[in-house]
Amino acid sequence: MDCREFEAKLWAFLDGELDAGACAELRAHLEACPGCLDHYRFEDALRVFVRRCCRESVPETFRRRLFRLIAHLDE
Ligand SMILES: [Zn+2]
Image (cartoon, rainbow, N blue to C red):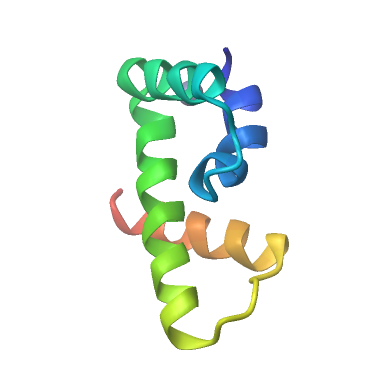
């Protein structure tokens, strides 16, 4: 699995929609790829935040913008 594939499956993974084999592949990628691990942690935290605050799905563009913003804070 590469980063692009990981990203494509990340939300399904977080929503528990992937089967055990696909989950294992994503976890293996997470252990090997710090960038995707950061992304995963961000998305996971964002999901909790969104569920708590507005209970509506956040547009993809907004999530990407927010992720970039937070990613820059670490630099
Ligand atoms: Zn990756």
